[in-house]
Image 1: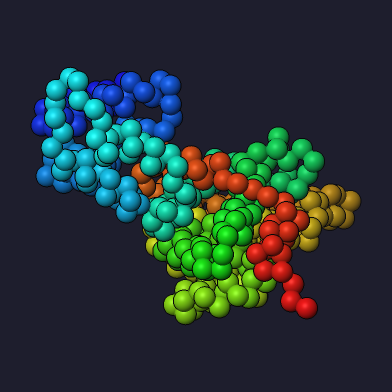
Image 2: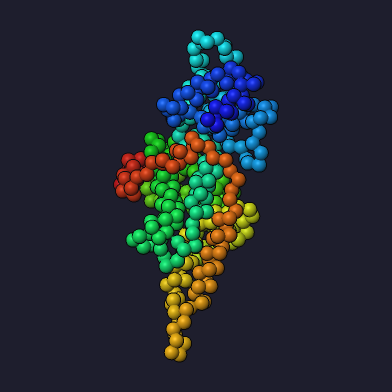
Length: 346
């Protein structure tokens, strides 16, 4: 309904030929999912018909589209499409545009947009975390999915990112492609750092540093020096030395929105829980350990503060769907792929 209204109210008035094609795509959405959402139509029109005032999205950075998709959309908008009822689809038809979106790899999208969409997904989980989930190490208990559902979801997604980064690199069939994939993920990690998404940034670096990927000597030799230097800087930022000293400082200094590494909070809460009794004895009385409660409250208060500053980013459904459905393999399966890519040297 939203897409239909957008076509009739905004596009049909000035771009009737394109409106006809979009109506065709809209009818096909009842049978297929590889076409535009209302949001994507708005985004594409904003990017490629910048003079159309109706397509302006205020207050939110416009999404970055892959170059092949921008080219295809540009051809569609500049192509003089005949309007006769019996015309056939041109090579640049909306069907082709929709199919192009459907079959594109995540890594074909701009690094900034990949980082943005990961951040949107993660922050949706982060802002749902409730203070009670942070007590009694609920995220480590057998019933963690009941007692700490949102923390559990965030931990699971973080682990999925680590495994997905490894898979995307190892699934490439030669060293050149693998080195390009490594470079791409380093760029994604840099964009995540700029977005103050420390959680996903650490996950991407962990995927790059995983044993199945890090052992690929012939692959890493081909990664440009610029990306290698960027990766070293991020590794220094994410290192666990002095209880994540560097990352803690970066989080404190972050301006605006920030998605912290969730492990820092959970580590602090674990130390407080394990290192302090719930009750202390005073004479004949057993008193609640207020010091422990105050320490827990301090950590939880910081978490709540950060979750109340949401990102002003726009979801790109086609890319976020790919990220939600990323391919995940076990550590053993990833190592088998690694050995196939670069067998052990004798």
